[in-house]
Length: 115
Image (cartoon, rainbow, N blue to C red):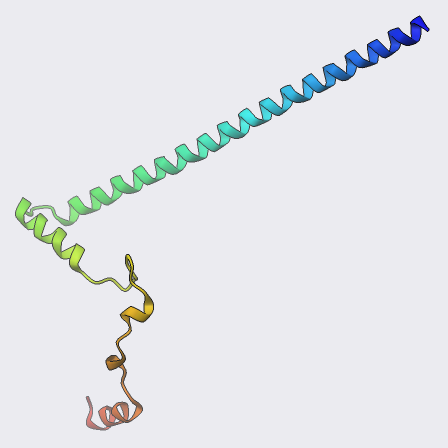
C-alpha cells in the first residue's frame, strides 16, 4: 500500500511537472509570436519611411531650381489635379456624366467628315 501511495505521488509529481513545462513552452511560443509581430510591424514601418523619403527625393528633383513660391504653386496644382482614381467620398455613379456619351450616329458622322 505504501509503495502504491508513493507511486501515485510520483505520478502526480510527474503530471504536475508536465503541466508546468507545457505552460512554459506556451509562454515561450507566445513571446516568439509577439517578437515576430513586432518585427513585421517594424519592417512595414521601415518600408513606409523609405517610401516617404523616396517621395521626398523625387519631389525635390522635380522642383529643383524652383523658388518656394513656385513650389507652393506646384503643390497646389498637384492637389487640384484630377486623377483617374476615385478619391475621398467619390463614387463611380457620382463621377459619370451621361452627357459625355457619344451615340452611334455621331460616331459615324465623325468618321465620314474626317473629325
